Image (cartoon, rainbow, N blue to C red; front, top):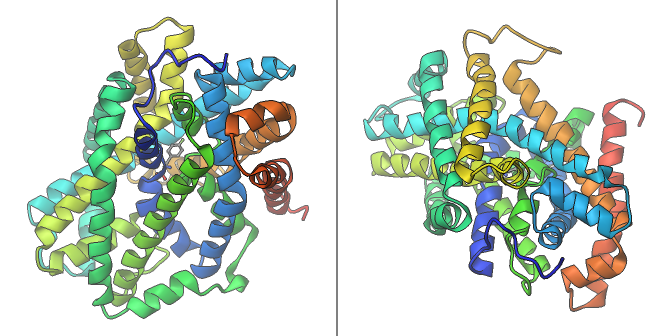
Length: 452
Ligand code: PFF
């Protein structure tokens, strides 16, 4: 089985895989979500816990996911079945793949709506809507925009259509091409914005907020959010990285690749925070403003800096691309499964999964306007979907992946697949996936339900 290639194709090189996996990891999670949840959860201490989770949980689980994918060479559902058989274990492990497919649908449903916001902001930026705008005016633009279900629906529809088109083009045609120029450009523009943030007058305050931990601010829910975000931002726990791993040729170092992807992902998130918080403080905004934080802060910078029209437009274009390269990985596990098991063409599989996601996404569209009063467990549909996926489904999925890779899979198999030259590295990885990652997830859950 290990000789097989995936029927869906293969990456053309290690570089292509790194680009695609980084494309999946780096997205709205880094630039839109990380700053606003850091802001809502008090800053420094939250950031510290998040970084700890990336190291102790995210890193080993990412290696595990890529490894399982490359060994199974199919959609996560079928990969888990095959690998369970190989290990002589119960084939019910394939339900883990299902959990991932469902999480992917649910995440994409709201992800697409927010990506749509970024799309709309490209237009606002290029037409000069932010020019000379102060904090109140920029907030007014945002509030007016999200109050309109029709506008949100339009951009959500457009983004879903583009996503499904790219996915329908397949692994090499669509996915690889899109990410090649995107990542370096995004990095470049963020660095440029750091330059602006430095002159904003509140650079130190912004940095202090982000990097000075005050552990009295930490609650069990903020620990859960930090851990959930470590999964979300690295695209772990739902088979996205697993399915990308299944297109990875042999003889490529999984550990080194993981290091690069996780490193780039963390760097982009921190850069986004370093850009946004100084602007927030310099303009008297609230760090806890919620999902609108990015859209209420950065346009102030673009509206008031030299060349802001061009940079603002470019920034939102790149944000849309970053979202796109993540979205395609959210839906790929489902599409791969439909092609394998339902004998569908790639196009039909895209059409169906796209339609379902679009419909579910309407729940999020309405969460910001006509349905903002509709709450389940005190949360709007958007908040509920976010909590359910990032804080529950991904950590549960990641926990199971760690247990499978560490305890169920035969040692000889994981050793062979990971090909770590230094035997110590294998021992460390094994210790992390067997004990540290599952225990950490478990303890955080106990903490949330109040047992710990
Ligand atoms: N990692 C993406 C981000 O940070 O925006 C979101 C994501 C993509 C989550 C793919 C999960 C996933 F499987």
